[in-house]
Amino acid sequence: MRRVGSSREWVPIDDPINFHIVIAMFTMIAAAIHIAGHCVHAYLIRAAPTIQSDPFDLWKLTSEEKASGMTFFHQIFNIQLRCAGFTGIILTVMMLAILLTALNCSRRRTNCLTRRIGGFNLFWRIHMSWKLIYVSLLLH
Image 1 (cartoon, helix red, strand yellow):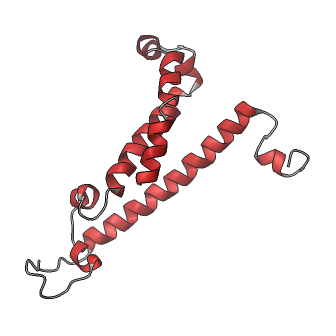
Image 2 (cartoon, rainbow, N blue to C red; image 1 turned 180 degrees about the horizontal axis):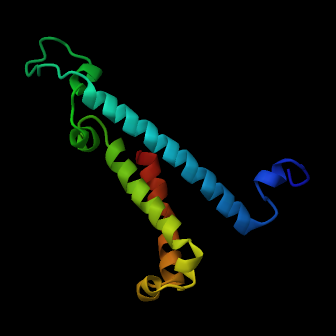
Image 3 (cartoon, one colour; image 1 turned 180 degrees about the vertical axis):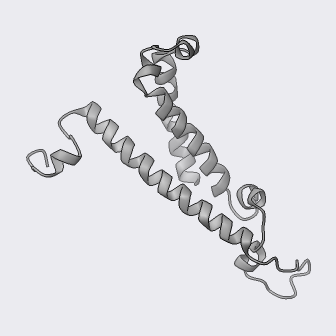
């Protein structure tokens, strides 16, 4: 794969730092598309008409019928349905922290905020949380 001409323009395999940056960029683009899809889906569920609750389970409602008209808060934090909303928020915050601390101004302490927070040490500590991100991805 190192000798392939056209793929080297998109993915710089020979340079490990640029390879890491390109893969991170594609991951963030895919995550943004994934989050946008979830936002549209949550809006469609919220906009659906609410079905009367069935406490005795006499009507045998499907999970889609039970979720119609549910608020955004209940869609995200309802552990009875699944934990994907909660883990998705945790993953998004952690990935944004990795992205923000990977910027040159953050790593090299070129502004007053990063001088106080920690610069490269903060970048390294947050990047070493990849194990927690991996476990969260498995739960998601």
